[in-house]
Amino acid sequence: MDSDQLRATVVGFLGAFAVLGVLLYLVGVGDLLDVLRRASPEMVGLVVLVTLGWLVAWSVALRTVLGVLGIRLSVVRSFLVFNGAMFSNNVTPFGQAGGEPVTALLIAKVADTEYERGLAAIASVDTLNFVPSITLALVGAAYFATETTFGTRLQLATGVVVALALAVPGLVYLGWRNRYALEARVVGTFVPLIHRVAKVLPVFSAPTEESVESRIGHFFGAIERVATDRTGIAISLAASTLGWILQMVALYLAFLAIDQPVPFSAMLFVVPMGAIAGVTPLPGGAGGIEAVLVAVLAALPSVSVSATAALGAVVIYRSAVYWIPVIIGGVVVSVIGADSVG
Image 1 (cartoon, rainbow, N blue to C red):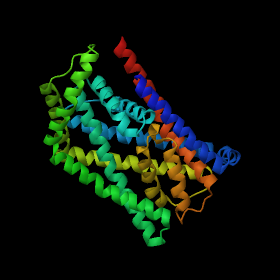
Image 2: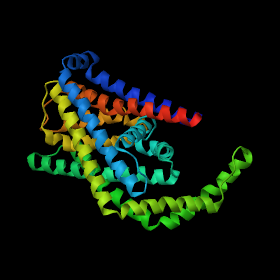
Image 3: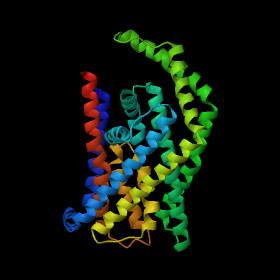
Image 4: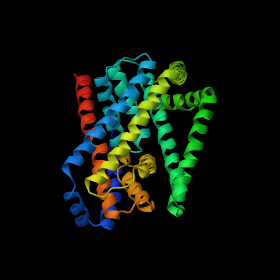
């Protein structure tokens, strides 16, 4: 990690601590600790197990996409690589957007393949993961719309989901239709810039336009290969959907752990809304996701829990889904880094 990346990560974590500090101030540290002390260890253990199930499900999606691209990894290696990817996402600002380049490098090293193929694989998985999250959120919103009148906060949250459901596929479609124009613009803009940098810092050789065009072409070719494999897409979407459902089960169990049961239907809407906050310039969305989860939970008419109880359940849930992949993935990234040096 270079100095700029380190600085951005440190600033991101400071921002996350600031957001979490505000949450703790509003809820009360003492009250939150009382809720957590009363949590059932058995239920917390189930949250951990379900979280591991989510990681397995999404690693299957990654393994499937890699298989479509001709990269064969075992289930265990896919699980470890995916946790390495989650580690990158959780310690870099802007979540997946910030961690994808590092994840692509990790895949390239483990699978002994081209960087652009690894980037295409993780970009495809992230795109496929978006589909069930928005679908489940829309199902949850439709369910609540039949049960009660939405307040201003829920109307805003639902509007964000609908906007993303329309905007993201549209942008992906436009980007794909104009991929060759995009390639030409990238080559025309960045290659001269890299050559100027190489003149100032002659420690590396600047790539030629032909080599950059070739790499971008390989990236687009890999994306097209994934997009046209219907069996691979179906398996990946099924695994991704299972992963989202397991995340929802984990949050549901976290509420049971503090003896504050909530309807599982609420999880359909709440968990994807929290994931959307992962695009904030905070490492892994830390702080932002917790704040959004508590805010949406407090706004749902069918969820009759206090802000303290909501934050207590969210802390248990996020402790599992954030720190388990960070711990496993951190070990993976460290070992691969050590092997690379050796």
